Length: 147
Image 1 (spheres, helix red, strand yellow):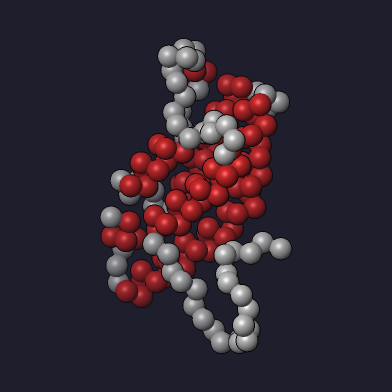
Image 2 (cartoon, rainbow, N blue to C red):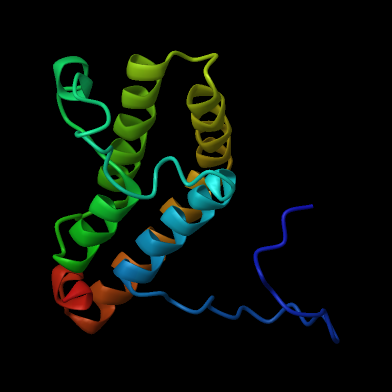
C-alpha cells in the first residue's frame, strides 16, 4: 500500500540497513510538500491570506498561518520538532475552518489536508527520531543540522 519511495526489491535481503537519515529541514519540507499535494489545484494555503481582499480576516483569525510562512520558519531554524510544524499546519487548517466554515470549498480542502496529515505524521516522527539519534551519535545538535 503506501510506498515510501523505496525502489525495487531485488534479492530482498534481510540485512539491517539503516534508512538514509535526512536532515531536519528535509523532513519538515517533505511534510509540507506532502500536505501541499492535497491543495495543489487551488493553492489556498500556499501564501498568506490577502488582507486587502479579506479585510475582516484578522478580526476573526488571531494568528494567520500558511505554507510559505512555515517554509520561512524552517529556513530560519525556528522549528525544533515535527510537532511544532504539525501545530502550525493544524493552526492553518483551524483558521480556514473558523473563517470559511467546514463545508466551504476552502474548508473541504482543509479537511483533505488534515486527513492526509494524520496519515503521514507517524512517518515524519520516525524520520525525525532517526535524525535525532544520528545527531546524538555524531555529537551535533539538531539546530546545527538545520543551519
